[in-house]
Length: 547
Image (cartoon, rainbow, N blue to C red; front, top):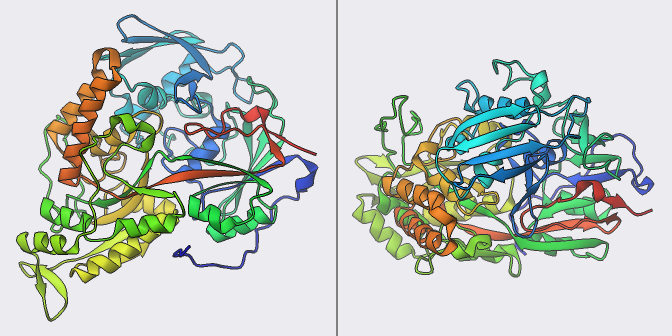
C-alpha cells in the first residue's frame, strides 16, 4: 500500500525496567503522533487523553460493547414515567483510590464545573437539557431534564464522570490548571497514576481497592509512538502488546500469528473543515443575551458554490484506495455505519468532478489568472492555509491529495502541520483557521456527531465543536425534534435524521470525507480481551497475562 509516511528507525525510549515476560505489565501504544493533553474527564477532547482516562476514571455507566446500551458502572438508576427524572444510586463500595467515598457531591461538582463560565469545557452543550441536579443523600441524586430526551446517555449522563472534588477549589478557580489534571493522585477507576513523562509514556498501577475487583495485571505503560511504522515495529518486536490501527496498517504489520485481531466500523467522521467565518475574529453564534451574532464571512468559504466545488475538487475514492482491502468508504453525512438506520438513502457523497468544480468556482466569481495559475476574486488570490495535526495518516493523505488536486483547479493550499496539543488549543477549538482536517467521534448516540458539529449553540470558540460557525435554524429544529420525540421510535427519528443529512450535505456544512474500519490488535499473551464496536475495554480487571 502506498502510504504518505516517513519511515524512521525506532529507538524506544527508556522506561522503568519491567520484563515483559514477568507478566506484570500491559504495554499499550498510544495512537501515533501525540501525547495526552489532560486527564480531567470534563476537559479532554483528544483520543490520547480519553484512552488513558478510561483506565483512571469511571463514569456513572458504561456502554455495552455490542449494543451501546447503558450498563451500570458507578451507579444504578431508575427513570420516572414521564421520562423527565432519573434517580441515580452510587455503589456503596465506590470509593476514590485514597479511600474517600465517591458521593453525590462529586457528581454535582463536575456538573457545576462544566457549566461554570471560567471552565472551557466542550461538554457545556451536553448539559443544557438538565434542568436540575439534586442531591438526595451522599449516595443518591436525581437528574431532572427540561424535556424528555432520546440521547441523554451519550451526552448529558456521559459528561457526568466525577472527579475527586476534595482535591479541587470549590469555586473552580483551579479546575483548568490543577496539577491533578495531568498527574492525578486520586482516581475512581481500576488504575491509578504511577508516573508520567511527557512525550514518552504514562505508567499506571492497579488500584487495589477498586470496587469492580482488583485488576489482574499490576501495571500498564502507555507509550507514545512517532508513527505507524514505529508502532508496527514495536508490536512485532514484542515491545507493545496493544495498538489501535486502520486496515491498511494491519496489512503493513504482516505476520499476525502472535496477535488477536478485532475489526469493526469506526464511529468517526474525518472532516475537511471549511470555516464559514473570518478566523481573524472568531465569535460565538449567540451573545450573552441569546441574540444571534452577525459574524464576518470568510472571504473564501462563505459561498456554498465554493464549498461544493472543494468537496468535488479532489478524489476521495483514491484516498479510500489507500486504506487497504475493505478499509474505507466514502462519507455522505454525519451518520456512521454503526447508525445505518439513520442515513438517508437518497443522499450520496460528493464524487470527484473537477470540471463541475471549476464551473462552480467560475460562477462564484473566482476566475483563473493565467499568469499565476491561481484563481482570484476582487483582486484576492484564492490561497489559504490548511492547518492540521498529523495524528492519523488518513488526515495527512486527505490534506496532501486536496492540496495537489485543488491546486490543479487554481486553488493554492498551503499545508501546515502542528503538534496536537498546540493545534487543539491554539487553532482548532478557538476556530483560528481557514481550513483544517480532523476526525470527530460521536460516542454511543446516533446524533453524537451531528449535534456537536451542526447545532448552532455549539458554535462557541474555545469550547464548542461547531467548528465552521454553521448556523441553520432548520437543522437546529430537526435535531431538537429527533431528541425529544415521544417514545423515541427509531423509524420516526430516521426520517428526521435523513433530512438533517440532506441539508448538511447540500450546504457543505462540512466536507464529509472518508470513513474507516477500526482494528484493535492485542498480543495473544493477553487474555480476556474482548472489544466491541462501542467499548474497547469493557472489563478491565479481567484482563490477564499468560505465563
